Length: 461
Image (cartoon, rainbow, N blue to C red):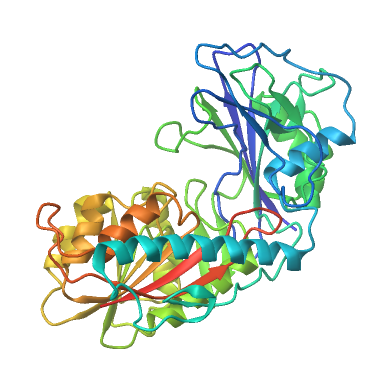
């Protein structure tokens, strides 16, 4: 199987040099969505990753709060010899549910989504009264219809892209390839190999077993004629950066070997993917997700489909044959170029893709589409959620009667977006359109062994 690798050299102001390599496997679908695990915490909190997962403790994170003014103790840059326990600790952080059967994992995720929806409905009821969702209470103690969680067709080794760091390991090896465990603040960071991560394909782990130099020629030789040739890469990119995450515009990817793009077959389309374009990491699961969105949208020949945060345009393009027009908005220029290429290659002519910030483009775009046309909007934002001006534009567009909201973190900023979409009219916030009503929620699992899940929400008005 072919693969796509990004190697990024990162120069930090820390004692340890830390290049990163970005690897993605070519399957029916690929996504350059990164999976570096980074320790993030609220100021004043420290995290210790200790012990083994027990019943009722799926995350295996022991958190303790530092006293006011108390400084955390400095930890050595490496801790001791490498053994299986380190890799199990890493698995408990990156894939917290790996010790459970997949059936048990789905139960955990379903209960989590149900809890989120209950809190959301409770809050909306306080704002609006009783008419915030469908009129009669349904099963699971919810007013909206909660669909059973849709499982991922692939459970193990499903990632079509992996991101590895190169740094000092628990045994002191400065060129250990894997994932970070610990915190930078406490200087307890070590790089642990990913052998126990069930979501990583075996060929990706084969890369992580080798020591990678940061020189471009050395890396190219390693993956074309050296031990890394077993990965059968489609493309090899190199990026130099002074930060841990960097876009193509900030520091261009340098093609060292192979093809400049990935091409995937998805939902009957041949799709082009650039290194900086967003694509879901679980190929088979993504097809299930996009089919779910299509079924809920119910687009027809009289419908304009508005695809906000469209990435490479897969959702809109897969529904183009049913809709009168597809309008896509995406911030990443490379992704928009990919969407336009895919449309042209597949003979799709009823689509437009616009590059830029949705809050700048959407209000003017909607003004030109208000003349009696029916619009179905699909939003699939990043974890930061939608800009308030995007929410306002959707709320105030009378032509939008159906809204599909896809979120991988509905308990985060998406909650604020949903409240503003469903709350009573608010002239102070310029929310003048009729509120949306949450009708149906469909959880779709794209990330087995982790706590994460995509939630597809159907709103109408």
